[in-house]
Length: 384
Image (cartoon, rainbow, N blue to C red):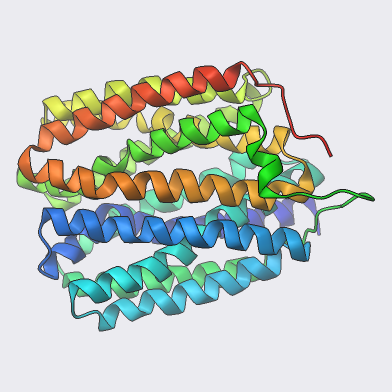
């Protein structure tokens, strides 16, 4: 395959995956509310998928490293995620929503770390910038969130299940077109979870990124409801989500060159410092002029954090352990930490919408401290 062909396939994969994310993050709480869940129950329902991620991400990472494969596990997971998400159409109770969410979102969550492994390896082998391929996911997120926001007033919330399932099905097709890259293992090389956890930089990395992601739970779970309560229309809410991602795209365009000069820990510190500012700002106002300014910080709170995490894993983890490392990162940062925080955010939100963001700001401060500790071990890696 040519360099342009591989870059296109990776970009296509991110575009399809983030089309699903662009519908899910802003509007899934609307589907949950339509099913009769209150704020506290929505928090619990949003937490169940996080624990599914905590189970499935390390397991799939271990399996991928054990098999020495990347593409085939990705395709299988994408198909299973599509089928399991479709089961939400049959959910008739709070308990069934929790069970389906555990499996469907748990499998879905594996698509990002597994895709990142292939994308980072492909970018290195075919000499293109990872961030330039990844930005197509952000563009797709904008298109999907704007599109969903535009039609929300014309469709019943139950249709969201099929919109998301369709996007996941397209992701499965895109996964089939990804390059079939396999890690090279030298004689006597082994990789396991204990070796990763013995690495001080990796432990502080997990702590920092987990707290940072936990600090986004009020935004992802309740920002749309918060803004609706403030009288903001669905179309404008879609613009707010899209604007934040547009700022992220600008970062990705220029990040490829900047990342050669900036340590991953520095990117994480920027993300967490911006997070404290963003969450405090959201706690103080729902005025549109301020919201549009605060949403620009998504470029830092998510974009810098994601690039910092990816570059840390790429530079510090040997190839035969990348799937395990990505699995642990996904389990902690996208699973256990936000899973524990989502019910708390829901409980606090039901009592004080502003206070829920202040709790997130405190988490950003704790994450900043962990990133400082990680920076002390920036150049340390795991030796074969």
